[in-house]
Length: 150
Image 1 (cartoon, rainbow, N blue to C red):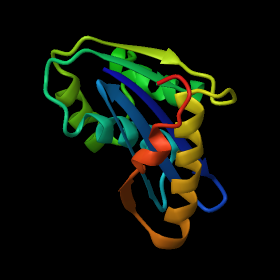
Image 2: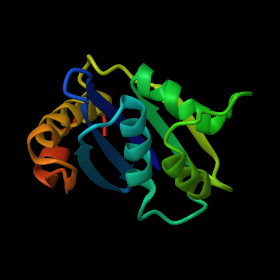
Image 3: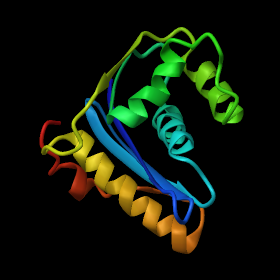
């Protein structure tokens, strides 16, 4: 299964968003956001949402912009000093990723790719969270089928 994830964060207003596009025969995507959050939390929340309804044992190829990939890398190869933030999401992801083979790559959010599509939806989700609070929503299928590179 291939998953493209992106997060966004507005430091001035402390709101953020996340989005993912998932391809495993079928294309799916969701976006969400929160107030009073961090970009790291949004990257973790995006991966957690992407794995939420997926069966265990399916191998993953995750692609994310560099800042988000650096956060997700701490799940793939835990650092000597484990992060002390977002322990709830990290515990849920550790459980969801246990026994799975997965890879992580850095994607370019500036070219016409699924990473850029996810980054645009993450920005939109962050803006929506700023005015409306926490939410998650499906990305319309009509938008997903137009994504280059799927």
